[in-house]
Image 1: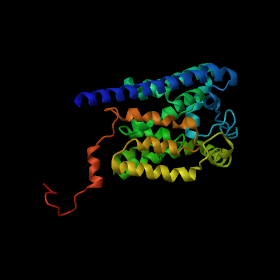
Image 2 (image 1 turned 180 degrees about the horizontal axis):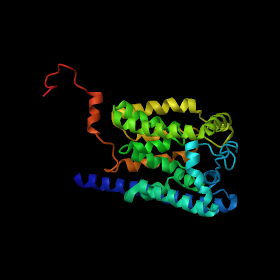
Image 3 (image 1 turned 135 degrees about the vertical axis):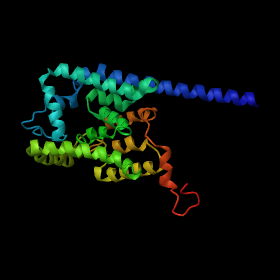
Image 4 (image 1 turned 180 degrees about the vertical axis):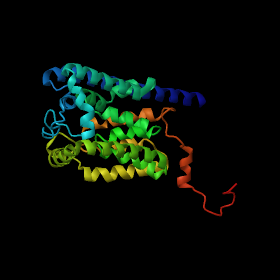
Length: 299
């Protein structure tokens, strides 16, 4: 009986490994296909990265949403990327893709980096050169270093719903750091670039809300997705499920693209001891806090 169970367990292990390895190989081949076949034919490698390279502080929101060069992020991000134009476009693209590739490898760590690269949304994100992988890194780091959340808040804004994790768990210091740093950055930006903020609200935010449905997106309105994302992260915070934070951030993207799920590359990083949310054991007090007068409550 014991021998039969051992054989059955061994077979299941072999099958699981075969499925895992097959999925990884398939995902890597998909990435190769994107860059080696689709890229030369369509010539759209770095479509999103071009917006970061070409943004001009004179009028960063002049290009309509959905067109090549459209920059949808806040004036803080516009100032951050404006220096990229000092480089030649091919130089910036190669450097930018190297940063994104390195970020993907770091997120996966020595154990999961191949799986992260094989995840189709990651391949799509690398192909287009968007910032979702950097957001994934900021979210993973944000559990231990909450200041990292500022990057999320000054770029795509709405994935900041993940900060409900700190609020529900009463991690007020972490919440204050994340929100306080972001508020300070925005305050300085408002003093310097007040005109750009008004233009951003009108053209970028308004354009995304008006024209989003006409783009190649997953057509679920933000007004539906955002409450679901909030409920998910609240549940996750109460039950100590940190994976709900990157999942909710992906769901809360202003426009939901398949490549946006590259944010889920944060999942293996969150499991690493050095990035694991601090005080996990303390969260049990949310579900079972002793009431006043309970025997032994004050010892």
